[in-house]
Amino acid sequence: MRAIIIGAGIAGLAAALRLSQIGWDSLIIERAPTRRSGGYGVTFGGIGYDAAERMGILPALLQRAFITEELVYHKPNGERRFSLSRESIAATMGPRSMNILRGDIESVLYERVRDTAEIRFGTTITAVDQDDRAVRVTLSDGGIEHADLLVGADGLHSTTRALVFGPEEDYLLDLEHMVAVYMLDQRPDAIAPGTTGTLSSRGRTVAVISVGDDRNVAFFGYRTKAGTGIRAGGPEKVLPQVYGDLGWVIPETLAGMARADSVYFDTISQVVAPTWSRGRVVLLGDAAWCVTLFAGYGSALAVSGADRLSTELERHGGDIGSALAAWETALRPEVDKKQKLGRRVKGVYAPANPLLLWLTQLPLRLAGLPPVRRYMTRRFIKG
Ligand SMILES: Cc1cc2nc3c(=O)[nH]c(=O)nc-3n(C[C@H](O)[C@H](O)[C@H](O)COP(=O)(O)OP(=O)(O)OC[C@H]3O[C@@H](n4cnc5c(N)ncnc54)[C@H](O)[C@@H]3O)c2cc1C
Image (cartoon, rainbow, N blue to C red; front, side):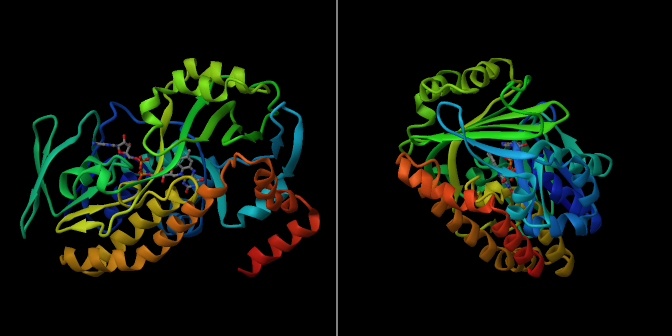
């Protein structure tokens, strides 16, 4: 059996790895000219952690995970508001969970699939058609490929989804925020090694995350009106406009953007699709169900989704339709739950009202108190 996978992100690479474990061949098509690296820090846990263990990549992921020694919340003038210790952060995350760079999850997967799957960089999909026996994919390099299954793992703005399911505007739900993330080549002096500094002020959040090995991530998230964020211009123009009045580490963090290899800048949008497959074409990861960073679970769903997809394909033999239906039925409740969480968090993320901000930070302040931390640790251990 053969799959064509569009996208070499976490979902696409995890699908290729898991498919190889059930004896399938994969061809991965990636639009970027080379592998992406770095990215941003994600919390990887839950069903993703379980799937990673089953797939045999957990030790490699744990090796690359980073530990935050202290998470410091600042006032807009840079003064410390409150902080969480390493132990309190661990208690809020639970035991089967880790902090890791998105790019490091991809690297671990890439190392495992590079010898078993063909990866074609700098290439994209331009057309799809299918019948009972196969799916036929036309590529931007002029190639035509046939397979038993086409996996659209090409992210939030999936071309596979647009070609097979319909235009993006039918599927994207704009959560009225923008996000910008990039790697900093220098850690601001005010951010101690291994710590995260963050502040929220009037609908804006910024964080600088020191992840060890002299790698640092700059994160910006702010409210916008639906549909206006991207139209306002690129990050070089917009971020100084939105954050320019704030002091602390923000001026030097903004200055670091000019030296970054790449800047991730996009709306925070969910993908809401009534079905994730059409015949021999299936969407996976953000392309199918992007839950957004508000839910903080997209990488876990991408790995678990890939794991369960192969499990169902193996269980149903050559019956692709039944496998995809069983897979979607099993996974959808988890996705729905996380999408609902993402929409709830949207309402309280970086609130403009200072009282609401204080209230939304209250659970974190409480988590820093030793008795609460002990309670949470016990609760996670009990499951
Ligand atoms: C700031 C931020 C913080 C986050 N925090 C967390 C967190 O704490 N926990 C968590 O679990 N998740 C988190 N997430 C979500 C998580 O990063 C994503 O859900 C996950 O990486 C999705 O992976 P993916 O492979 O589906 O999509 P993507 O990472 O978007 O990968 C898609 C791939 O397809 C390629 N591609 C795109 N279009 C084409 C095309 N036409 N042809 C060929 N290739 C194409 C892209 O270049 C890319 O390599 C966060 C996301 C953001 C933005």
